[in-house]
Length: 465
Ligand code: ARG
Image (cartoon, helix red, strand yellow):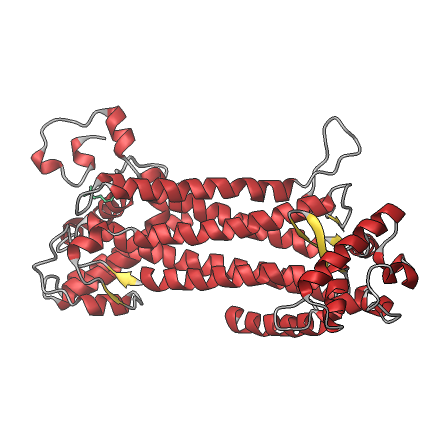
């Protein structure tokens, strides 16, 4: 970088060291903010005209010049290659001056790169939050579709990864649907706080030009303007909470991936993953590996890393702007990219998997998953639950010794443990009855689950509208 290439050369007589320049420059990554920064610059030019700083003609010249930049960048894929600009803001200003001449030198009146970068970053992120939220919506749709396709499939539910109680496959799908609904709510909240205009805060103290900040905010469709200039240029809460919300998305995706990896294993054989999202082994011909899901699980750690990086980067910074904050971009960009692709792949996995209903049903009927049901049966015969629990424990121990499931015992065998047990016990212990009994809101009875499925479909229509 030579003295002439940057925007602040006046005070300098010496050239920047090349290694330092490479270290300092952010253009190679912050060029992603190009459109957002042009958009904000156009609104700023209008603000300067309204404030009487630019004539109408000058403002139009600047705006047209900026639009020309957009077109050139669209047209020429290598537009960003030919430069050694310090950052995207310098790039835009330099190019503008090249195109329209000295009028371009008026654009930076009343603003600093400090409020400019905060504005462009918010504008850019606002759109990306909407995209991520829509991708979550797509995955939710895939979950609902799988639930509907395999409406009667039953599998064991687990605690401690031990078979616990039978649940509907649809119930499993809707569990993840719920998590992702909360993720979308969180992202909506982040969107709201991102959607505020910092421009007009200038370097740190506000601007002395009579720029109507609220009019600029309206132009850029921001909900309002930031209330304190010191805060506005040094606030990156919105970026951190975005990455935080994404970290939770990744927690949910990672658990989803882990469940499916287990279910696809030979030990479980609950599901078959599509060839489209699996790979083979270069050595072992029999292998079909769930790479798509493993990568999703693996990428979660990377996003948590970005959250930690941002939090630690901010915590010691004195007010207001510090160059440390340039480190915010790559963390957020990488989060957007990797959460986005993980969501897309998760939806493809979900849309293409097949539930092996015989296997899941067989697993749900073996391993005493109806033991609690037997205890509840005794409670209905007025036995205190703690006593019932103890009795059923003994029945289970006995059944294990006979290598039988509970519903394979004879009535007399049951009655050795409690004479409250009658013929109707066999009906109560059936898989259908066990499921149907979980009939309160949130439970896994078919009635409740199908209701929840309808509610999920309705909420998707509203959210994806
Ligand atoms: N590239 C810088 C960043 O991302 C833009 C702001 C630079 N401001 C400054 N005073 N050097 O943070």
